[in-house]
Length: 499
Image (tube, rainbow, N blue to C red; front, side):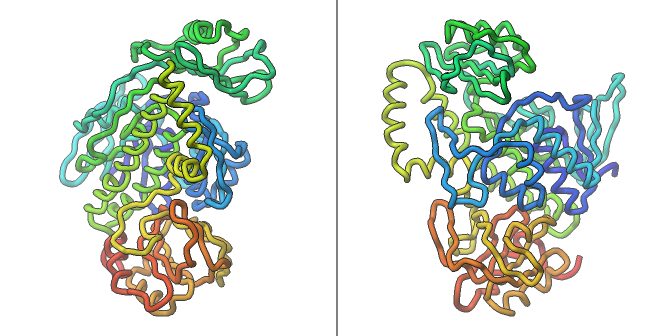
């Protein structure tokens, strides 16, 4: 084997997955078709749940140092307020994708991930023991890698998805948007970030003095997806919408997107899996795409590592599709809704007015906020506790090991059995999984924990936390159901006993 896992694509999803696998000791090669990072800004932010994930790995500060937190977001251009009580990191972090990729690649290098650039996947072949991945490299030289598994993180036009024969159904584009990082010396000082007009809308977001991200959206215009966008096309689109180009000059990057929405009908075909844009594409409204890809990676990483290491059966990988496919379905649905809300015309204007009037109500604002951030996400769970399946709140702790918050317990990317007062029986139940489980005894600083979409609940007496920060089992006061705990341990981390 050249590697235990080959990942196609060195974007945020592929790099985060590589880091997760290396934390678990899996040998990884990332194959990237580009010779170097483009430096293109692309996505522009990280939501609360992804910030929590980065904090759970102990690497959040390096992202906070390069970004800027802001207390508001939007749903189809209608403002959403963010609530501090819902997360230790409630506000979106404005940070360019180019910086995110650089920071994740630096982290991957620290962990020993091998990245092969100028290496595009051109063929794959599976058998009962692994997968052969053929790469086209510089000079048209073909290289074949042998791995246990291949994960396609190679974008919306994923070669891996096509070679694996995975269908990508969905809805066609109804509009075209152009995006560019440019200078706008004639933009009025009182400009509001988005303007709706007869043919669509346009926006300008300041990144630094004089440099703006300009986006134009024109409905009922669908461009040829294979035609490269140009600066002149962006200028002409802005003139059609705004009547001026505001002196647009000095383009750094130009791209195009639309509101096509597609999702892989299965995230796994044997030894080939998909994550990020390779598994789902959608209108980039609300900044959900990059975040969903990173969260795909964190959900898949520990499961794939457990299977590769022989600690869990291969069937564990099926839970990746079962948990993440519905998440993308919800995002595709809300981005279709946002695209419809943004469509120009008196009917849409009226709909926006009504929708905006509803958003002044806290419950509506909260529901949409949770939808965009994924803080309310709950995976299917056999255990009946309100926390089971949900992301674990980052509660303050008193711990003999020195941890002051739940997130600190997850830095190593291992599952955690956290005893908050349930007693020795809970800790003893985890002994047979001691080679792959961290057992921690601590006390919660707070009597109640806040759970998005639920509200305040009594602090639990014990929790089984998966490496991705979701709760696999929980118990409150009273006699803990240790049989249910052992079932959860077996389900998620394989049979007990040293392996």
